[in-house]
Length: 344
Image (cartoon, rainbow, N blue to C red; front, side, top):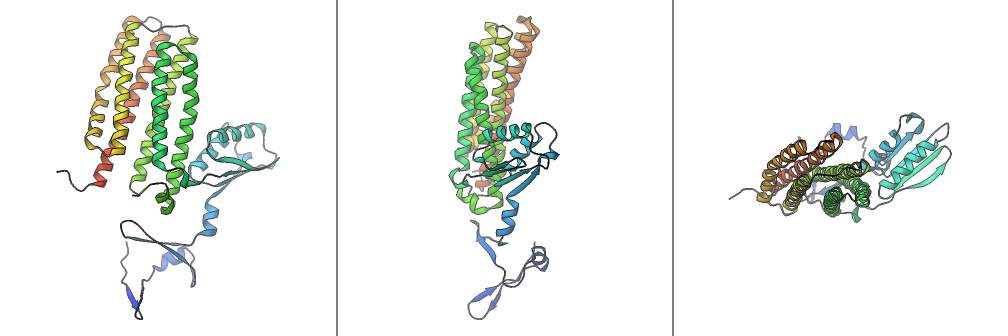
């Protein structure tokens, strides 16, 4: 931290000297323009005018010949998208391989707003055409929660009813949940780099950005657990196995408890409700008894080891959901503390 004295030049102009090392680091000279932004807390942020540099930072170039390992190219595309890159150029001296094009097209189906704008044998340019202001972060978080809530209830219903079509629909929604999650992270990264974007997408306080990312990741992880339950349902059908009635009742009871905890946690976050958040964390810890009971009953009444593994996986996924809900509730408590000065 540096302290500078405000100087009065003439009758009306106030000046402030800038650190020499900062000037040199940005290669600034007399006449260069600086951007000054006043934040909500009254502080001023001074930054160079970064038109050329911003354009450079928003681009990324990938040599496909260096991506010989499976799915590396796709992961690089997802990573660049999440980091807020506007343009990604893929090049190859040997010609872009069909498997690389397959990875590109798979990524396109999963990344909102990303499309091919140029394509040749040795060259593909991808560009993200979405406008950040059209996707407020809170709206994305609510959409992600709605998806995970439906996936959770549908995956358990599919399991208990041995409904193959419903299980497949859960797997399809998991792709949509990933899309919303990646877009949310992209928005948060761009907001961290540009306070004006942060304001445009509804982030009033920069301190909330990390918490929002944890909430988004927790919801995406709940969606992953719902996917695991849907896959367990498909295994049950493929093996032509059936659950014992007592196990079905225990899974249903466990699932209902999980749904209440998940709802309480996300509600606590948006309402900044300290007590609801605390209750969600306590209730999450208490769900261990459901997992233990299901596993004990399954071990005593189910003889097929394949069926036992399916039940263990389902119980573990439901328990994991409550842990992620507890993480959201922890962020809700942190948000309450950040927005208050006392508890009286």
